Image (cartoon, rainbow, N blue to C red):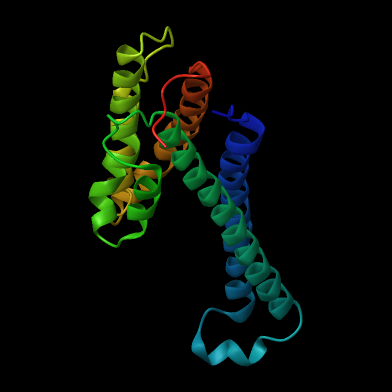
Length: 193
């Protein structure tokens, strides 16, 4: 089993999240600036020349950068889930690495599956280290469960705004804990192929 690099997994998640937030704020400011210049009324859209169009172009460009940063962070998060599940495959894990990631892409089913992919990993990891008498620290299952619940809450209008900051902070803590947990596993433990 290969060790997980914090630089490879944690920093893109943190960087993607922070860059996405910063770029989104800049995008919103640019759109607000555009609306102010346009008068925000349909009658005034003929005044969209000059600085207003430049602000709109910058805002749209930043929106694409925001999207790219967030997608990169998400991809690295999915790779981390795969690698984490891969590390505890000894015949007792509730799912395979491929299913852990793949089922997250099934609409509506993913609302259930996020609990299996993240919270289930914490449970199975703790069982794995007990079964193999590994002296690693157990994962905080409550942290993983809280992340899953906040993830569901973030889809609810208005409640999602309240869940945004806590879910990002918990996700960063959770990614760090997952990397540390996988790296704490000794090389040579039974792994099912």
